[in-house]
Image 1 (tube, helix red, strand yellow):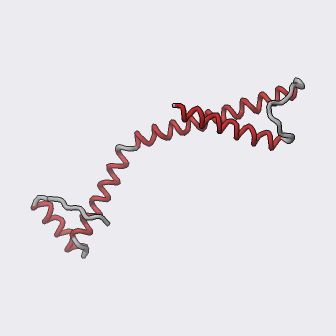
Image 2 (cartoon, helix red, strand yellow; image 1 turned 30 degrees about the vertical axis):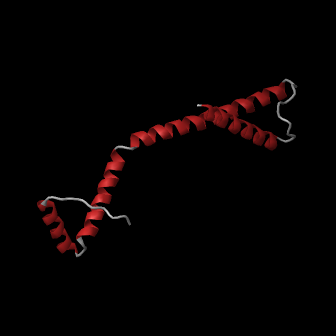
Length: 115
């Protein structure tokens, strides 16, 4: 673990020594635990907004990808109903769905890389 040097007031140091005596752990171990707890509390309060923004953009990208897949599947169904040639070269429905998936994933990646 990395070493951290900090300066504390006498009152805080006395409190840490009292906690150390009652718990049987060293002052440095207690200080490390307090810092870690403080970090977790701070992390849970602030970065959630940033994480939510990242998650929202990830969800938007995922929804866009699924939406485009559904549109392609529907267009293939309509082509089949009207006896038009398919844009996909696979013979089975499963292979066509895989081809749609890979084509849409590539399209989304290209679009995201341009942004």
